[in-house]
Length: 347
Image 1 (cartoon, rainbow, N blue to C red):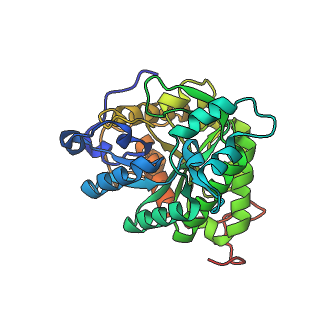
Image 2 (tube, rainbow, N blue to C red):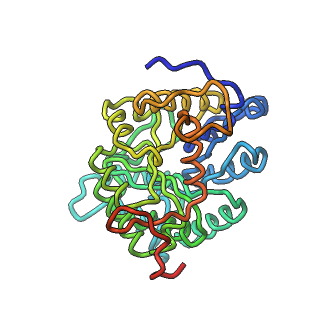
Image 3 (cartoon, rainbow, N blue to C red):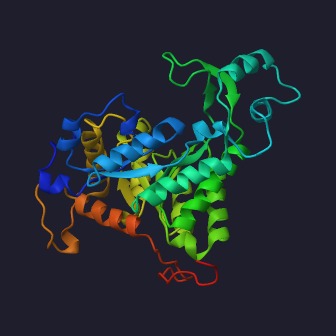
């Protein structure tokens, strides 16, 4: 559909871009932040941007919800074996007895930093999350397609043949999720070509953490999930939400079927953009798509007293965001009715 013009500020102020990367940009102007009318969840992904997100949230606490964590693309920079040397760590990830890429590995190794011990990463992550009561874990997740570059920041970016083993990604992800559950923090999850591994991980976390798992919310961000996989996640995990973006999901025709099959109270919207001057338009684009697919009206003003049956798309997504933010979800009994939190596991 053709996106409608941006709504008035009274409506924009109730919009949350639940996933974006403003600190990926070379700079963010004060003017841009002062003109921002929506709230953004600013993700971190790597060692270099944890402090940038922290600084942005400190400067603009009313508009920025900070999210800290290590993206699967950078999980190879973290070593889970504390006694491994730099070469032993990277060799264990990228080479095996049949490897044909010894020369490529040697070239890559010379440019790689010393890996960060997992406990050191988790200590920093804990400090960042505790510094902001509203902070989330993100962006974290699993990715089976990413190839490690010689230099991530180079233009053009030259790729190696090396893919980060899924088992290592899962170890790094699980450790971060364990911390998020301990601290009661919501999570933004990346999943690319990893549907089975992702659904297995969610079920493992649910079994491991019990009632504490239901105290947090999990957002499956810009995921290329099939409708069947999403319905399965939604059925099994009452704390799971789905957010889509035009820039990522709009490339694929199934994003409209994902919106259509998603329960109305599980949808969120995002931009997944790194330009703070464009996150509003990008998030609005997805909101308009959601409205069209769901048949929801688009507000041109804001009314706090409007009855539920007359809610428009922004009001509905705003209520969904509140449920996501607040957590403490209720499980379902066999009849499909919501129950209280599980009481068989430690909180």
